[in-house]
Length: 571
Image (tube, rainbow, N blue to C red; front, side, top):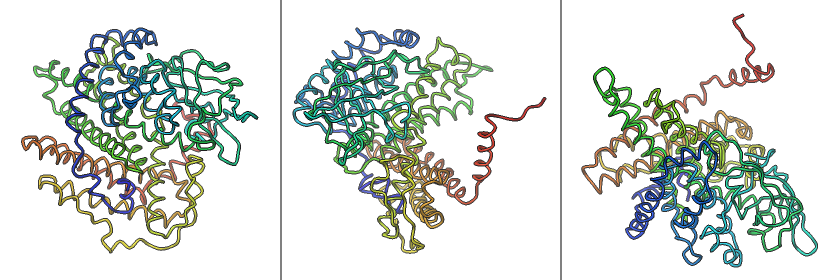
């Protein structure tokens, strides 16, 4: 059962949270060796990373070094020549590479998290035998081809087309944009429109060497400049029948499963980046002296250091909880994965901003690492699902399951996400019945599993889990099927769910740390700080469901859109 979705019904699934998952000792030892080898390879190249960022390239000899280190085979099973890491182990390695350079993590992550993940998850035995050994060795580097000029978040509107031929093969035509690893990939997972009774989108395995496959020039990007990003085009490419992934018409399901499963890599990378920023900021705060004291002695700098630490601990707690769900065979973790992506990427962006601020004028200079970290982190809330669309996904997924559990909603939502955003309008009418809130629904007591030092924090999450259920009930009764278009309300509902899930993960981890080491009082302090911060945010979001300036904001935005820009001047 989904931990996050049950929050919408006022339920805390304690067994899914406590005890906080711990990595097996044998896996921990193997991972330490991989992390150590990775550090030894990447640490001496920091000057190169800065140079490669400016030149916007990763030299072939460096890519060869990644191959030799085995970083392209992290999650490929050992029987196919890979290292066979769990999702948790993979996320931990991505966290480590991100401590050195984001472009390195992206080259590895685009290959493993999404590029070849479809073969791993949906490939036939023949497809796995044909490709996985070469992918593990890095002989083939993979890329994920979904986005088009007219199809970003609205993935269902893709125009790349595949026509079935008489011999069962396909002819593929179209162009994909902003493809990470596009210029160095030997294998693409491509999504194309296939108009048939079986479905409208199909996933294909396409090799770069096939006639008609080409990639464009390296894109000149704001950040992650050294990683390869290009267009990829397909002109009358003959794709064998055996290169279909899963089945004809199942492409959208394949794409969403890949993205959901791969988000731990992005979350892990964000955590690693935060740790680097925090290390840089603390070093600078201790060394930089102003008015006779180190700047780290001043409260406003302490506040930034502490908040960066709280955000990192909370993000790490959520990311590894989601990785545990995937590794443990949970059937439904899509909302949790989306939550971990939204929270971790936004926390990373805040940390980059505050780290640069602590560094002051030095942080703005290219000789220091802060400006590149800030540029690199900006993409995180955009790719693999923009955080705006993921918030809508979080809210509507929770509302859908709430409606089913109550048996009071007539949702036609089984294929809602076949048409992201536009498809949100298919909700049926909500019967005018209230959720009975006097029955004690949701009174799952996580506090009974926590030390007394976390009792106040437990009460925050128990209370606001019920408040989320009441808020969802109110919105469904008030707006009925129109809730699908009430994006301000959906965002607030999603933000409450994000705070609840991340907060509960943080709570569980702090309790586990404290039990393992009673001297670790700071984990408890972090959990309590985060609980009070989320309490204020959740209270505000609930209050703004009914008391807000939404109509005025819409009217003002419409005015500016009609005017084509800011219409006022002092002249």
